[in-house]
Length: 112
Image (tube, rainbow, N blue to C red; front, side, top):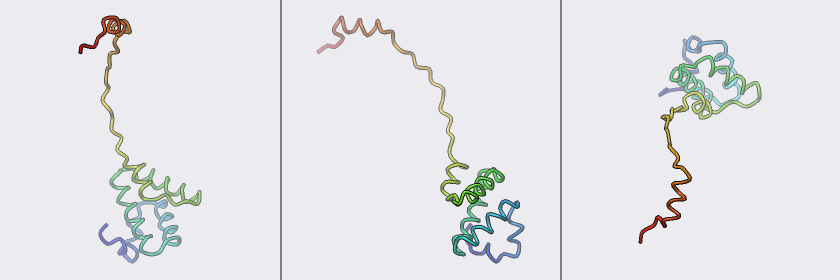
């Protein structure tokens, strides 16, 4: 992550790419982006695949974008694959009966 440009000339570069999907992604970004951006994209994508533990799904998502002619941004990928899906606690809220409001209106409910 600290030196993504090293990815380009690494002897084990192809071994770092976990599947054919990532090979295709690398080939696309290597041809479409400048050297620095291509390396940064793939290194960050591999890091995201590891962090999200959804390597296959992420690879398919990026390839689908490439097939549509739009390389997904890293931010899009992070939002989709690392998005915080916080579960909200179940809350029970009791609504007052309308008669209670009517009683307040009859008695004036407000004290000055």
